[in-house]
Structure formats: C-alpha cells, structure tokens
Length: 194
Image 1 (cartoon, rainbow, N blue to C red):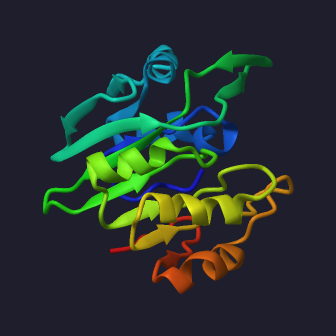
Image 2: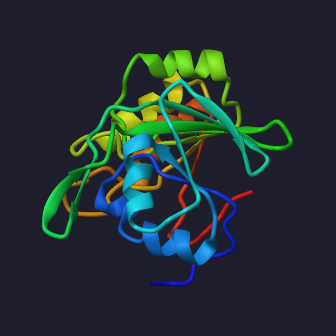
C-alpha cells in the first residue's frame, strides 16, 4: 500500500472493494476517524479500528471541524472478507460543509434518483459535486444528469471507466455537463483539488 497523505477524516460511501480494499490499512496508518453507515463501521471496529463515527442517512455530525450529513444513494454494498460476502450496510452519500462555509456533495456510486433534487435544495451543496459512475453501463450520462439535478457548478469524475464493467469516461461526462457551465475535475489517484 502507498502511504496516504495526511488525512483528517475518511468518508466511506459503501463497502465495495474499490472503495474499501485499503480502508483498514489507511485508517490505521492515518489515525483519522472513519465516517460511514453503522454496519460498515461495526465491521471496521471488529478489524481493530477504534476511531469510527457511525451514522445513518439523514443524520449530521460535527467531526474534524466539518459538518457531515449522510444522504441516500442507490447502489449495493458488500465485501468478500475471508472468502465470505459480508453485508456492509446501505450505500450512502455525504454533504460536507467545510470550515469556510463551502460545501461538497459526494453522491457515492449511486444511480440517478429524484431525491438528488431535494439534497440540492435542502442541503445546498453549492461548490462541488462528485459524479461517480452512477451505474455499470451508462455512467457518464447519468452522472451528468446527477450534477444537473443537484444544480451544482462543478463535478468530479472519480470512478468512470476504472474497471472493465464501467464504460463511462470523464470525456463523455464533460460533453454532457460543460455546455451547462459545469466544470469536470478529472483527478488521478492521489491528486487533490482546491
């Protein structure tokens, strides 16, 4: 495992391998609290991770100087642990309000769903929206629609085309949302953005 940079907080949307394969090692190495759905945090505790901050959808908590609200997401969440599929609780998204009042909406690996509009209206994530793959087959199109529904100004393509089942690409997402004035931030693993 590559040593992670300084980490203040780890948010986990769901328990698929591409999201948690290095989670236990990163949590141990960084010492950062891990925020996730109750069942996933329980699994982490059984793996020896003491700093977890379990929550459920609709809840908010102040942690590491941030206000974290857990939102709904539509996906699945299971992980092969010691040869057995383990249920990791429901998938989730997060709206994070930063110290300076700016906010980020991380939708997780969700498909498009109508309540994204409510998340945009009620929680007002006004600065960045993650546009993950949304589905196995048409991630770019649905991701673009998710950014539009949430009415945000920037999207991040972070899991499009990362393994063979995922056919969406950041370029395809750009063609859908940049004409609407939405900037797509295409980050490589380990890169950050301001």
